[in-house]
Amino acid sequence: MVVTIDGPAGAGKSTVARAVAARLGYRHVDTGLMYRELTAVALERGTDLDDGAALAALVGVSLATPVDLRSELISANVSAVSRHEPVRVRMRERQRELARNAVLEGRDTGTRVCPGAEVKVYLTASVAERARRRASELGIPATDVELAIAERDRRDAVQLAPAPDAHTLDTTRLGVEAVIDHVLRLVREAEA
Image (cartoon, rainbow, N blue to C red):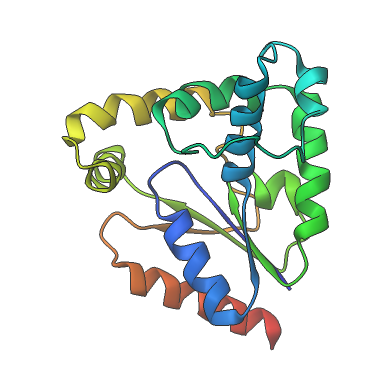
């Protein structure tokens, strides 16, 4: 069984994917974190972020020193790294290797990484709500985050589309447990 959870930043992908994977006893694969790690490796090694082939060659390479993968520096550069098709091709190969009894989260797991997944979910929420959630995590005003989220949505627009057979769920006014229960219900239905 493969479950994909896609959507924009702040829609609840990570929280829901971790919880669903834990409750099912599945592997949790955070595809966005994989791109962040690749970005950190590239920055650490001084790799040209415009060189897609050089970046693709770094997929699977570990960091020499620990770094905060959610830092501003990584956030500011991850889209530049992930936009290269050679990087995306190599990364999808690696993600597919991990997609066995797994919950994958990202922006294109249901459309490009695992289009044959048994359960596909696309989470969304208003920009204001996503900014509020992210700001709460970071301990800063939501107004500081809202523009950044809107800009990231613009940069990632190509990848931000639900699969035609995905279950779209607007989480703006839903609690985390309600979203988790909804996804688990979809998994039980797929297993039946």
